[in-house]
Amino acid sequence: SRTIHQIQSGQVIVDLCSVVKELVENSLDAGATHIDVRFRNQGLESIEVQDNGDGISPNNYETLALKHHTSKISDYSDLTTLQTFGFRGEALSSLCALSHFSVTTCMAADAPKGTKLEFETSGKLKSTSVVAAQKGTLVSVENLFRNLPVRRRELERKIKTEWNRVIGVLGQYACIQTGIKFSVSQQTSVKGKKTTLFSTKGNPSTKENIVNVFGAKTLTALVPLDLKLDLEPTSGQGERWSMQDDSGRKEIRIVGHISRPAFGEGRQTPDRQMFFVNARPCGLPQVAKAFNEVYKIYNVSQSPFIFANIELDTRLYDVNVSPDKRTILLHDQTRMLENLKTELTALFDSQDY
Ligand code: ADP
Ligand code: MG
Image (cartoon, rainbow, N blue to C red; front, side, top):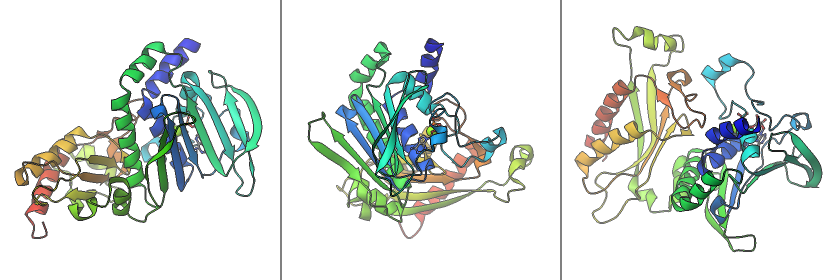
């Protein structure tokens, strides 16, 4: 029923941040190299994501926003070796239930026309019309939670915090994705002045992305991070690690940037900490804690800028824990954290730092 659909949708799309994540990940999955995110009134009025990706085939218009329709997964076993961000086909269907939702899409590079799709709250296709469009897809979400008054009021009440989180998470995608131009802008109202919050230039390196997002001062503050955690199975844990025996990969690498512990007195490093698992932004409080604990030994007065991508076999973690995909379970986390602290200590004790 409609009510059940709304409740379930509210579990996939819990806040502004989940809207932004789902839409940006869809654009990345579509192979976009240019992603433009535009907010009106900090997203309370509207969120638009325009990409230059593959576009959507007319064959998929009818089913696009129906629950569990996805073009990305063909059989359940794919879940263990997931390469795309999306796999459940729930985001667009949820957004139909929770907002004024439309999609404009165009597959041909030389076609000046695209198709605008509008949907019913159930996700059923309501109408299509021909409009001016560029290659790629524009997704528009207006008036989020318009039909969930309590949640809408809560969102309005917390908009400041929520907005900071949204910009934070967009910064994470913009920094980790090399070769992709991100731009994020905000307008107070339809007629209001447009402000660009940041834009990246399609840089080949994460370092250049970080400079685009966080400013040139990060250039001198950061040193490269490249830690290899050796997680050979110990006796008694053979079974847990047996999955990876055939893959030949027994290593976790943590790659990125961190601010120098000895970074000049009085010069404040930006207090930003970003974590990724195989380039997927995620909050990893335990990992953050390990980093901060070690850093504190060297510099008690500042907390570090951390940009850390944990690269590991996709079978060593699970993203399918919560509907909003925010929780990631790492296998054997305790041992990994111990190893991480040892490697970090070695890094800070080495000559270069
Ligand atoms: P999922 O990402 O899990 O497949 P979604 O509900 O997020 O589910 O999207 C449903 C489908 O809509 C996707 O499988 C994809 O085929 C299509 N789609 C969504 N956004 C885009 C986009 N920006 N570009 C191209 N196709 C898209
Ligand atoms: Mg998706």
